Length: 97
Image 1 (cartoon, rainbow, N blue to C red):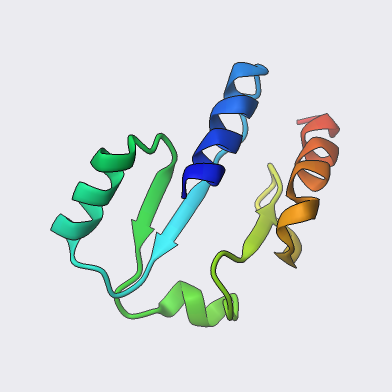
Image 2: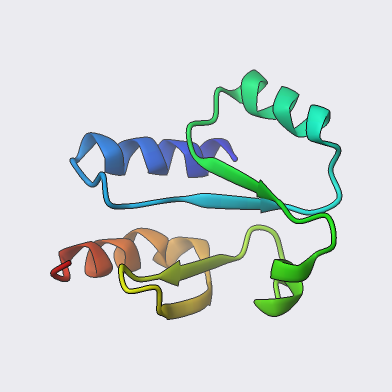
């Protein structure tokens, strides 16, 4: 989570306010998640998916899995490995809104 938060902050500092990072947690208690977010001072959004609906829909099989949805709401890349996250993010951010 810390690495993803650093990535999110870096892109925001570079002026990419149109980049949204969302984490999804499954069967975690809301108070535990809130404590974790506060303890690590995470700045990106985290959604709770207690019934694993989104996790099943996108076939999340490892943690973390990275999925890229463009400005139009189209899934552009799924199950992207960590070394390619920055490269793919930069490509999508260069596209016109």
